[in-house]
Length: 296
Picture 1 (cartoon, one colour):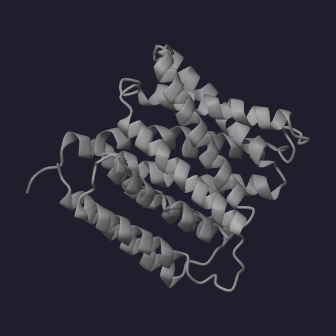
Picture 2 (picture 1 turned 90 degrees about the vertical axis):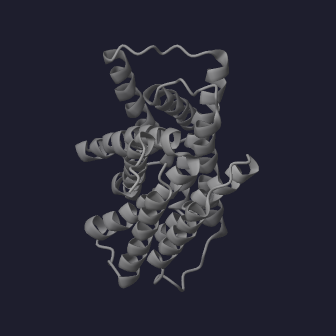
């Protein structure tokens, strides 16, 4: 049997880690939102802590912060896209059920594949099959909460999050200008843009910057948001995208809703239904199939 390439050995685990860590968003965010913390404040501190930690890491490893004007332009766009994705995602939590929001956000692998087709990079049939199966698995996971009215604002926010996240992935994969920038530096500048944007939003609003953030546990939740769903998730996404391509990396994002559902079950007492177990099984089989068939 042909062995996996070096890129695959690096890229696939990185993609799985991306999905798992990004799926931890509700674990840290929901307790803060339930206490009345503003979305802008949560995201500002999340990004600020991440920038400080990453900046310290870059200084410790003596990496240069220098980028060209062209690279700065691409990094600015990436930062605005990533910031918009977070803002839309957290906003969707206020309007629709988390299960539905998760399903809609997981449209991004389909969007990545479509964008890549327009860029004349057509995914192979195993990848298309994996996209269809994983999305079907997510749909099955979220069944059982019928009868609720669907707020179109929440749907629009979820779709907006999926769209900008897909663009973020494609640009990392396709931009030659930032090809030589390290994953850590790319993440640092993308998150710096986010911190500035959310500070600006707070400055022009009537919300106190620390409203709903008062206890040590609240600050630990913000630190958790900064490390796992932000630094680790963004850095490993860049690693996966550069090693196995944008489409395959996005398919591995199926571990995001799987993780979010398991967090809801274990931490918030949400039921672990047969549909959830079946959906998780389908998704894992689909991803395993894609990895085994598309060896390079």
